[in-house]
Image (tube, rainbow, N blue to C red; front, side):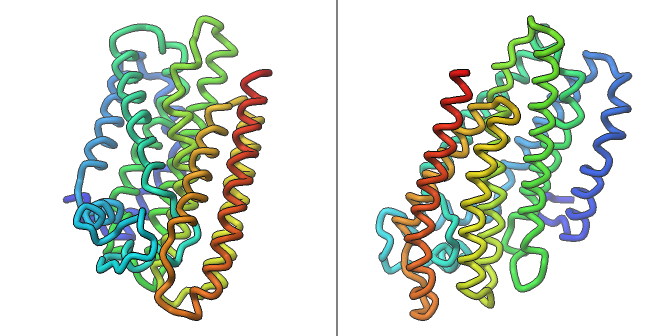
Length: 315
């Protein structure tokens, strides 16, 4: 069965089963050989890369429309002709990062590829492999399920449009456990170099922010969503992202996480500067004013995350 044809109930069931089964998976893998764990990690990552490459996602649709000139972020008031969900609803969401923010996927995948190669070809990561494999499998499965659910067929007035945000939230939680395993390995084995997990920390931070972006985009995709609801979710998401950036950075001693949230919030602030007007004059009266507040919230949150990351790094 193609990834593009997985039904919403099946994707939801698979996501719930992955999260619920994580403790059992961890217990099963605790008796598995190190060589087998390394192979499993490689297979899980390959699954993720394969899922990401399947066309038809909503962000792929946005990219196609930008290439055709139907969406031009540098001209917020352009007369755009895009017929896809991004073309119609980008003006409604208050959490819409500028395109440059997504360049972060390059370092994430290059870094994780380097880690996979390192754990296969050397013993440098052996200390963390037993603890990280179960959540790493879960993270790759959940992101693959996100690829299945972040598609036009999931949009509309029902709850299916929120499935993709749930898959990203599960990805973020799983990556948090990977980072937790890394911290435990570093505490138990001083020879383990925790910086090797930096790509996973960036990934964790980015999907934390992306969950909120996805959630807001899902609400905006429903034409019946009121501008008041979009404003409330947008503002609360900016505050939540800042709180995550500061709180997780301090709690897990992870300055890279804070810098990633700072990057995401700065991109969201820039996105508000470039947004185009809503099609409805009534909606724009509310959303236009809200966008100005949102930009300030995102800038303040970005600054708070950056300062916290710098402080944590210098401790």
